[in-house]
Length: 612
Ligand code: SF4
Image 1 (cartoon, rainbow, N blue to C red):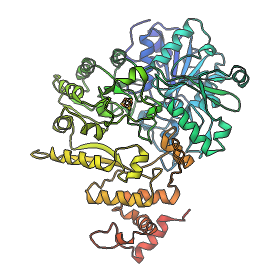
Image 2: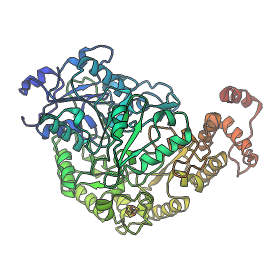
Image 3: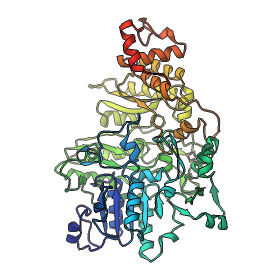
Image 4: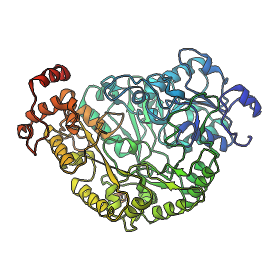
């Protein structure tokens, strides 16, 4: 294999220049090809190339015709298909189910990704190359690997392997899996024999499943059952959630009408050395030169650095536990320094490192001695109250100091959110370090709510912890020339949140001067715990009922967070009345909104529309 090229080839002409007559692997993606490690296709393409395979990329093919799919010919080993960095339905629709007008992963922001891109691309490739193995992966495939609630159709859909003619599904981050698949196919194994690979799922004929009854596999209630019975859906969710650990997790099977989908345990986390190698591959940090217009998603991450993977926070509305897992995998300081040093040599680099982090910025270097031998605990969350969790941020402080000292670096920012309960448990003065050096005007934190019942359901630290963090942050502002502010993210409409809880949050926002124009309204994205609650009305781990705000109530909850916006006045008044809190309507100092007037009433009637 030749050395890594400046960009992976997207055309026969580029392939010929590299001496390639047939690609080993062709990767198809719903994103533009941006040669940056935060774009999954670029990352896996570079990793496969590093392992000795030639890789061609088909980015954003026109799925209505054949030409783009056949442009690079037939690969020797397999097609790898992904919707791109984001689930195509999340990408193509707003949380209110309106079609978006642009796509930040496309040149010029132009829409070029079909709905349910993985299924569409896979059908197309299977039709054109019926004998070539197809491996699907990426966030869409990963988080739709079991029967799942689909918000866009408001129904339970089959696992992707039952809906798309793919041979294998790769879930999680994928490097171990794709290189393993390539190696075994190149050695002559057939794709149907690759059933033992961690981090992959496959389909089995029903007759074979019945005849084998393999032991040691956790069998979930099947698609037919979970699509008709919400309690069965919740039970199935809890069963597969508990097995998502690479050390102690078991294989999980779910029967579907025409196939049985079997998920092997997750792939083992990468070692520090492996992560270092991957992130130091020669990414150009640019979009492919074939594009005439910029790809908007590149700009905010072009000079950001991944320091680690995984998150043990287990926030209920985030599906990361099902994708990257809870075990933190950190790079070495030396490797990150080398990556940033290389960035400083790019003419486009202006001295600003936009972010150093992972899913949660301050989990870099944190660990638990159990992870390697027993995995993360099945029935216990990793919080600072667990004595086994090492919460010192010393490694992070040292890393940040070293990055600040690299010649050519003017500022190093922390753009990823920080987990404030961990920052409070730290013994290395982390918060002072980031306030002094790594935050411009605002520090992002995500308390999400303050009502105890809601933070409990969200699996977030409670209000007292956030209040302590705010105090500590404020104490660090004393004597500063330029004051910094906390930018808290709060969420409305989450399962478990009642109107009374939302009013409690609105009052907290008002009393603590935390009003913000940025509002998050809960969206049921695939495979999160919260989405399971949204669909079933049950906590999957206890099967206790959970209140689920929907329709008009959800709109009112959202409006309550932005009670100052005149357009929300009607919703806010309606919510306050429904909750018996008319004491908060009026002109008194304790009010959230003034009473409606006659002129406003007409506007409100029009704005609110018909109640569900
Ligand atoms: S011992 Fe504590 S930190 Fe370690 S995996 Fe279990 S809960 Fe998490």
